[in-house]
Length: 111
Image 1 (cartoon, rainbow, N blue to C red):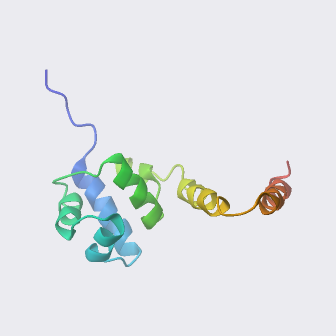
Image 2: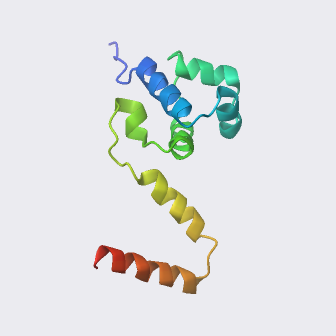
Image 3: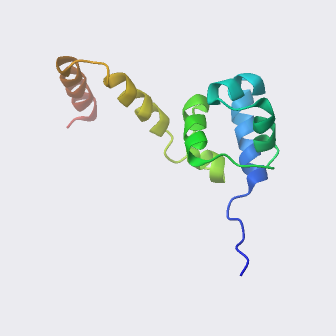
């Protein structure tokens, strides 16, 4: 039984290229940020290959686009990369500062 590919690699590659160029990041710089070769980025953007989930998540953070945008062109989860960045920033703070930030967020969300 043949399984059809559910994701169109050419479209994914095109969206990655568009997001990269919007951010004014060269293929070389993007490859360096991901720890891959420029040739690999070229293959991704032309639809010959597709990122694994780890690289897709890294691309989401670098290009500030949700994974859903790369997969199907929608921008649901539009702030997931920001939440991930905030969580990483919080990890270096002491408990008192985290509590202050929590109270600030509560006041902004009326909870």
